[in-house]
Length: 257
Image 1 (cartoon, rainbow, N blue to C red):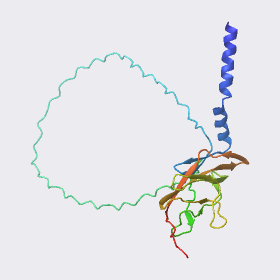
Image 2 (cartoon, rainbow, N blue to C red):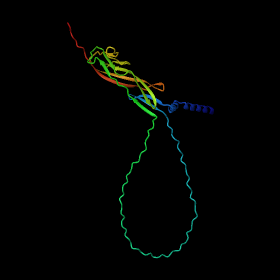
Image 3 (cartoon, helix red, strand yellow):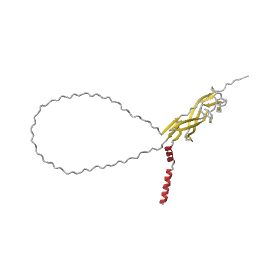
Image 4 (cartoon, rainbow, N blue to C red):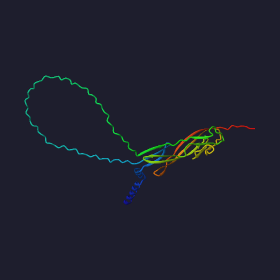
């Protein structure tokens, strides 16, 4: 029974030593660890080196023993004979003049030079990148007609790429957008196309009734980052919203003979 318990304890200790958290901390001690994620609609790039901090061992205070007082033998006082005292002649009292107090001259104090402060390089750094915002355009520009296709597009780039240097390392970030169109009449369209004006545009919508509609475009960004020839996915996505108003009117009716 004792032999089995010792083997189990040894197996648990081996698993604890091979846990991924310990390996990750050791990697960040020797190399730079980089992480890219999204927060509050922005791209956050973090880099660090030296994950754990070491503390100096506490010094134990030394206890000093107090010296014990040594007992000395009592000394007996010797008897002294009283000496005859002669009366001293009295001298007239002299009234002393008050001393003249001189005003102290204040000394000029010179400012002490302060030592120069040298900045040390930080082992952790954080960069924030904002993504471009979208604008919406449509054609015809003035009062599109009911039953006539309206061409729509956005001026966003097809990709967003940036290269940053963090904690002495180069990180390449690449993101691409996808789009969700809401035409304001209850219809939606999901696509990766930017759209274009007439006649090449692929994002078209035809309204069946006259009125004012709110066109909403939601752009969703996701992508990857590359560090030390290794490509990883960015944690999270970034969403931006653009809005434009459109007024659709009925076409006039004309009678001809």
